[in-house]
Every structure is written in C-alpha cells, then in structure tokens.
Length: 82
Image (cartoon, helix red, strand yellow):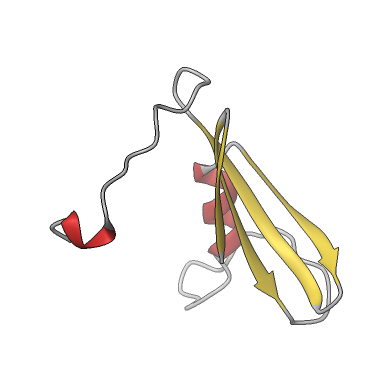
C-alpha cells in the first residue's frame, strides 16, 4: 500500500497480483463479499486500475474539501492516541 499526499488531496495505491480486470458491481444482498470496489466508488472522488509488472495497481483519490491539502503534520505515529 502506498499513500501519497497530493496538492489536491490524497491518493492511495494497492498492489494486486490477481489476474483479470476489476470493476465495481452490485452484490447480492446476502453475499459475504463483492462490495469492495462499489464502496470505493461510493466514497472517493476517483478510482482506477493501472497495469504493473506483477499484476495491477488499484488506486483511489480523495480531494481535500477546499481543493488544497493543509500543511503536513510533523507528529510521530507514536504521538497519536490510536
């Protein structure tokens, strides 16, 4: 997983070695899976798939509310209560 801070928001990339294309689909109401990309599509501004030497990279982007990211936080991960 790669999380990139972009001028307009955040971009997250995840490597996927499974063969075949990806697409958002409607899952059956009682199905235990099949909702991942539908959820990504519902809560992000953009998403897509790019080929890689090992399969594909699935990515999504979330825009900052005003179109600009706030200044970076210098806190260490151990400074957070979670």
